[in-house]
Length: 125
Image (cartoon, rainbow, N blue to C red; front, top):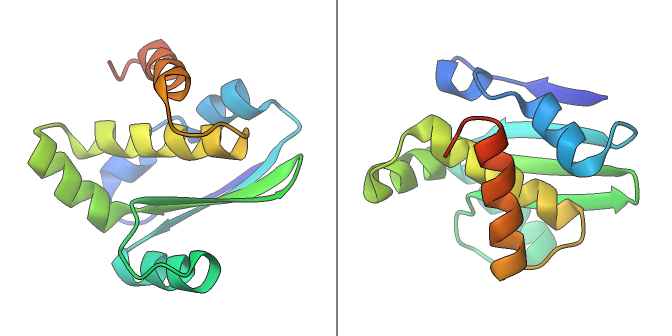
């Protein structure tokens, strides 16, 4: 089960979070997705990672079958403008990125390739 708490930002709710999460993590994985802004993301980053910047996404594995993702919409909006992509596309990439971290992957070519495959499957690339 996935608990998605969306906000008034329509572009946030037009991403198939549950389908994408099931494709990456499997049907039995329990994921909590928190859509947040800069200050909650920064607070979580500082408390749990001892870093003070505004992160775009944070992933917290709680067990092998349970985890949380904090998706910072404000940071994603700024990054989308800077990269010349839609906010929806940027959010989808960050969500998928967070899922692969929950799946135990680290940054690198393999992770990027898998991210692109998932995004393409769901119409983002």
